[in-house]
Length: 146
Image (cartoon, rainbow, N blue to C red; front, side):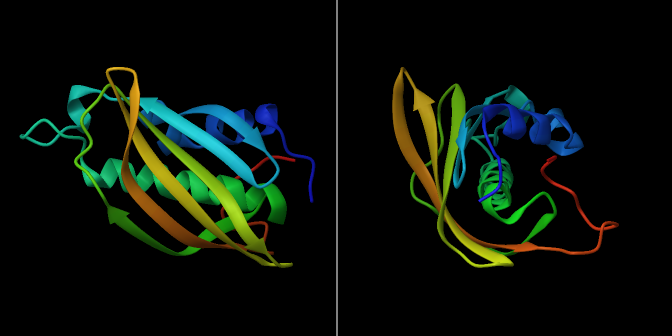
């Protein structure tokens, strides 16, 4: 397992332009586990007032890749992801908690719970599972800094 902690995860998210655009924050991290969160802005909502599923999916994907990268190394990509939306996301914050289920030398199977914080209570709004793959070519995506 590589050296990975809250500071390493924060550096990785800060280096990712899309995560910066969304305002993604790292709230917890250790090898094999990460929690990311972001404040819900009006631009993230459907007309009905719920958080757009694309935002939930993006946050889950980033959390899965960060968790997988914490054990595989700095250069990873998401090979596949499946997400199920459980409940409409209505609240002020969204958090994605991801963990590695099983890791090999080049791949990690990870799962993620996406919750929305509504009036101080966490409500499950989506679950996701993804396969994260280490890539060997330095010109490919670099997600985590060493």
